[in-house]
Length: 115
Length: 114
Image (cartoon, rainbow over all chains, first blue to last red; front, side, top):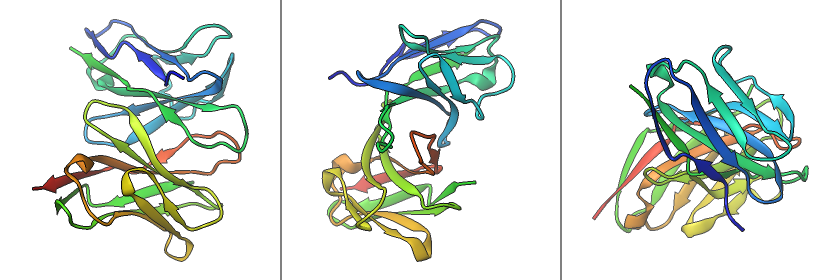
């Protein structure tokens, strides 16, 4: 059973460009979470999605950031017009749909560098 | 709102010595607590978790943690450190009435001295 997959692992963008980060959850998992890790800091929650629905986006910046989890295909975190402050590691996690399972399985992360 | 405080951003111990990483939490409802480990340039791996029941929780790689409600703590310990334990450790809390977001502490970087 493959784990959570994220691609690309490393992404370099110039200021003003768009960044698209992809996350494929573990097989059978229908809950996806995105977290951001700034240098020397812990992980901060960004958004929680189920298939075709955004459940909690309380941690998402109000502008330039969006996320989706379509019926088919991976979850996408999109950052428009990137700035240097967006440089960070972005982690995706997934969990099963069953209500009593609270464990989140993390992917290897995408390290975004904005030049 | 929930929060997590990890005391000590860096901890250094000798190989074979006791490892103690401290975590205190704040939660208005019974918490679900987790410890994750992150090796350089990798994702997070779950070490152990507390949901309900026994307050002493055993995890992988010889780690364990004890939930102490009166002290709002969930410290991580390992009796004898190994060089391979060098990594960053994160404590996290979830309110969890279903799959919910995790709130993480700032992390503790563990260094093992030979």
